[in-house]
Length: 210
Image 1: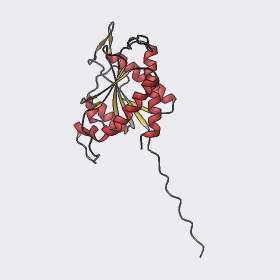
Image 2: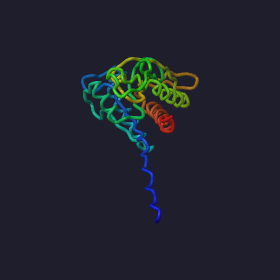
Image 3: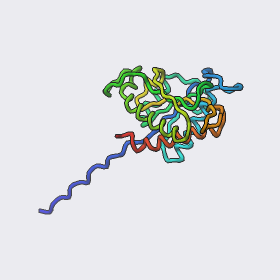
Image 4: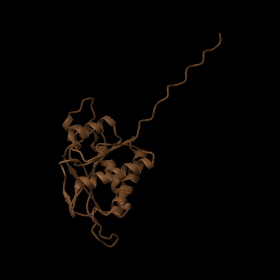
């Protein structure tokens, strides 16, 4: 009896690597005032667009929560991120105080991932991964000679996101022995930050499943 060849094993699709970029504020929610008449919502939208373009040029799929000057509820931002099943989620902020870049992760206590996570604390299952992602962004910014401060916060929409999530807040660059002073509105400074974050996300593409 001729042997019947066994069917080929099913093709296992590798998990998609998607980055969600959330430009904070928008519409009537203007955020902080940054310098001469510049609003935080404008800085965050511009940087989110620049980051999206930079990541796509590196072959990384990107989902953005807003592409225009619109009001967006925190729940809608979290829903977009969760629907996209992001491998990394970044919320972009800007401030006129401090120096360099401030990175924040959720202050929720890490918990095991279960099928039904409470909406307001869903991030707790991802805090450990979020801290690893934050560490990679921290390293990339330090490599670019941009000072970094790290913090924990319990804020919307971060705590409702089911993905490794880091809030990235750009502050002015205070002049020092290796840095020259630059305002948040300086395009070359913004590009430095975006390029460093993009480099970190490219590294994260290799590490996120570990």
